[in-house]
Image 1 (cartoon, rainbow, N blue to C red):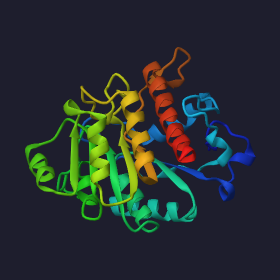
Image 2: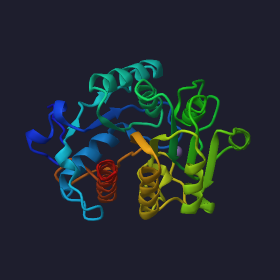
Image 3: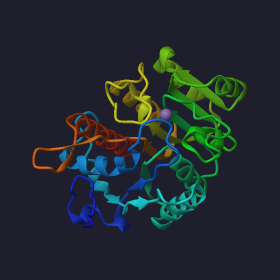
Length: 298
Ligand SMILES: [Mn+2]
């Protein structure tokens, strides 16, 4: 059975690609796991959970859906090589046209490399705001430079980076980010919105791409991810960070990666999300809708 995924089950007139402002790009891709498994189906569960959202954003007093939300068919790339994965993501982003706001849903963090490279074709100079527990600044991991543990190391040559919520690194990564003038890190134990603000103001680029690894959240908010780390960001802190990004910069795209939902068998033998994962999928659907609200509110 192939099911057509729609955002919030919007009526047809709000989801045809030609007229839509927003494109959601679900990417099923998972390679070279570091710890827990399951990010391949994360994007699908976030989109399914969106059907429970209200159309109206009470906090921002906005109904972003009026701008239209198209959900691209799921890109199934787990059998692709990392290089193929990058080119297929770029092809998909190109095929939706240049006047859209694309939100990529992973999949593991390596998909962000493809999404950023696609954005490079449309925007000549942009910085990256990374919400994450990890710097992802390894030179290579499991023999590949295109692994999720190396994402920001791959992107820093062309982009300034503001990393927020970081709380797990190896010693070499720490040395590398400390030495690299293009990286500003706001550690989780040191988090303060003013620090995020001054980091954003220090950037040379006026444009910004946002990548959110869900392990940047505290596990009390999101625990369904391969490498949960205690001491992370809370919901309200992440929303405040996003509000700052949109007020200070022109945001050119975003992604949310590494959600790994957990399933269980119900008494009738059907496979369902655990209650915890159901809440978390809904939380991340809400996060996607907050980003769209902020695009419209701008
Ligand atoms: Mn991470």
